[in-house]
Amino acid sequence: MSDFQTSVNLLLIGGALSIVGAIIGAVVGATIQYFYSRTQEHGRRLWSRKVDAYSEILKGLHHLKRWCEEFFVVHALQTSLDQETKDELEKNYRSAKGVLAETIDLGEFLIDRPAVDRLRLLEKELAQIEAGRDEHYPPYHQVLGDRSAAYDRCIGDMVELARESLKLS
Image (cartoon, rainbow, N blue to C red):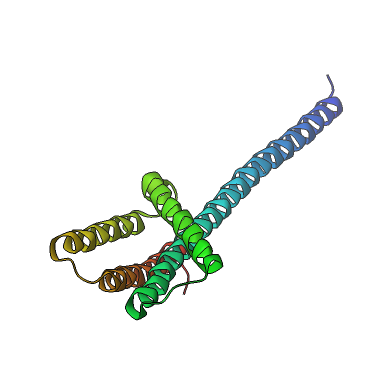
């Protein structure tokens, strides 16, 4: 084999290795980019689910607090609500209780542990209010006021926990 043919073969092998190297580099780069974008997309979806969960919790707490406030006024002033308002309040109350029970059951799958712990604390606070009602027989509007205050404290705490979890300002 001549020196010329050896040089040509070396150039062909070098060119082929360059092409193979470029192809391998492109495949590795595309694979890294694919997994990076999947990780980012998963993070966005998880964040979005957390936003939805915290929104549902806060909306539920709002409805529970509103139920207490409306019936507080009714019992304190010894008045009544029209049936449409009463039905709406009852429907929202039942729905909100379901959302909170579901959130507590699913727990950290949806939201962070401190938020789940705060909802469990709310359950304990409400149970203590009810226990005091059974023992001391306070006026029902006072019980509703205490429950409303417990919901209000929980709303404030949950807003802060949501901001921390979602890394909002």
